[in-house]
Length: 105
Picture 1 (cartoon, rainbow, N blue to C red):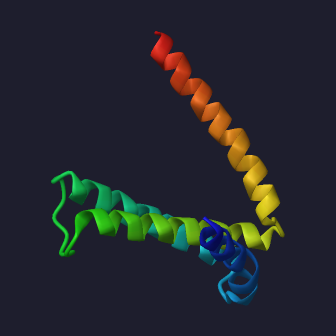
Picture 2 (picture 1 turned 30 degrees about the horizontal axis):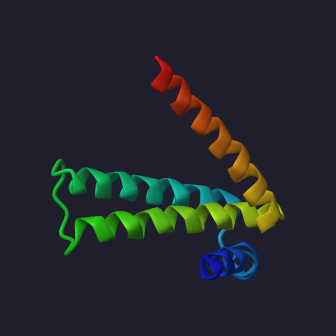
Picture 3 (picture 1 turned 90 degrees about the horizontal axis):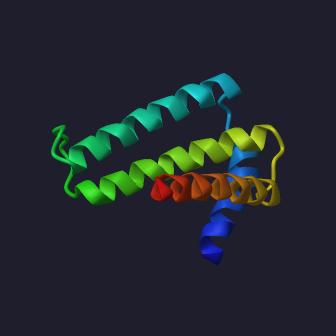
């Protein structure tokens, strides 16, 4: 887990600051990566043909690309890992409450 945190910190600060793309270009790149993740998920379910050796690994690869691009965008707004962690906790709590609510129905 520590290595993941280090990687996120690096993406937020070191690489994010060196990234030459504009904020709008990063947004377009994020949209592209989300589309590639969607295609990978469809492929993993047999709903789309892709020429990749391992469907599950491809989903992981594309999901990581989405996270990296998201972190790159966050770096432009000077967020740090503490900001990201706090928001993740808030959003995870909301998601958990929604799941619990649906389970009660």
